[in-house]
Amino acid sequence: MARKKVIITCAITGAIHTPTMSDALPYTTEDIAQQAIDAADAGAAVLHLHARHPNDGSVSLDPEHFMEFLPKIKAKTNAVINISTGGSLVTTIDDRMAPAKRASPEMCSLNMGSMNFSFHPLADKYTDWKHDWEEAYVRNSDGYIFRNTFADIAKVAKELGGDHKIKFEHECYDVGHLYNLKFCMASGLFKAPVFIQFIFGILGGIGADIDNLIFMKRTADRLFGDDYQWSVLGAGASQMQLAATAASMGGNVRVGLEDSLFIERGKLAASNAEQVAKVRSIIENLGLEIATPDEAREMLALKGADAVTF
Image (cartoon, rainbow, N blue to C red; front, side, top):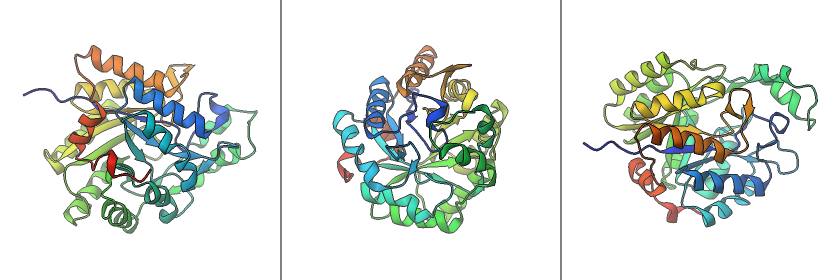
């Protein structure tokens, strides 16, 4: 049987890193759009998108901020657009769903459980901050709980997966999240094939160890059989190592400045596209092929780019 192709997802800006941490982190409308287009040109089939306030780079859930760059990206690429429903650690699920309701993308991310989610150790690495909001935002994350209750998950499933026919990147930060997803599928909230993003290396989630990847994959095989596609996100320094391991195991990969600001140890990435190009080279050097956006649509059973509202 022919080996399936590898889907590269690129997470363009996220809601963790701040402008002080890297000049390459995009936050204006123009920069988010251009970096997304460049990442697609480099080989990303899926673009995972958050918005920022264009004046200071702080996190934004304003649907209009998304609508300032989504049409530009769609006009220049065929990539699958995936909008976060995570977006903020301190707002309601309704606020976090608002951009997706406005844009009705082909995909949305969906965290499969509540968790401690912290990046406060980063605060001690910087002394001069570009914007007033940054230090407190990072330092106070030691008190954040990323809320994703069963009620929240059901709300997203029904309101975005129903009339909008959006499919989900089910973000699983620990093994219990896989069991949560299995329960939700048994409850009729999600239908196979599901797309699971194994996430490693976030403080509050499972560690970035290859043994943990093997354990998560083995658990998912037991729970879902052949009814799922899977991908791996390694945060920070584990990004490329875990991507290479995932690709060699038959999985898909996610890179991007949301997940790591670096291209190699001690060297900041110049752009999202640079990370995509590097992981593409790794994949192709393993003798594998990357998936085109339309091939990704078929693999993930998506509704198609003509069914979005941007």
